Length: 328
Image (cartoon, rainbow, N blue to C red; front, side, top):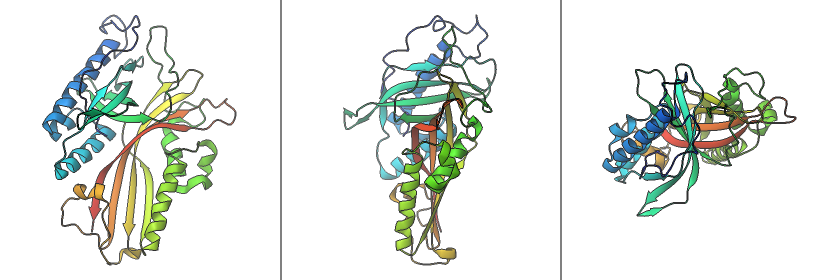
């Protein structure tokens, strides 16, 4: 969940002529050197926060979807008296777009391991999105997502900088600014949704729909109603061009769920899911009418070129965590 780290990275991406550039001899708003500095600074600050169990320190270096996830994680762990996990990252690969102004951003791909009880977990390949809205503000980790498949090759210019894509690019199967809405339509409505025609099956599309539908069926068997909605959020969205003409789209969303008595009439107490109990505004909250349990997600999706016959968008990376709970 939280992208806090155990050690500094063990290496950097293969060098390009731009890697040693300080950013003063070319027009790019973000240089490779600056991106590496931001990344290493984040690793140091986030690990120090994890060691101290300091939520304020952890939240100071994250934003957007990552902030909501970290807030929920630290709250839950503090409630349980559980130490904050620490992470070790392997060799990073930097994808720094050739930007000329704000907002500034870049993406890092690196294997991540979790340290628990003195042992490291198997590594999972992770994408980390760093952003700065304007130069007067600090850099933050805005989102991280675990890859479910290898990352496709990202297009780069002759100087090694990645190629960014506009949110309204018309050459793709789905315009980037509606990729999230297209995914959400399948999650909310299932394979019967018209959006399924351009959305690949997978854990974060038809799989997420099936999981939510199963919860709805279980609630119905208890005389309750369960509903869910994968909803857009005001988190920054960015895109990178892929070799071959497609795009990698990075965005965050909310998954809002409600379990309620029909017509919200008061009834027996509805159990609050264990992961959400620490997130209630007060431990005295009881769901006699309804229980709200919401998640915050970060996604990365491949948006193929429109010229590819039968191609569909495919969610290749995701990370979700409980971020809001309420019962009344």
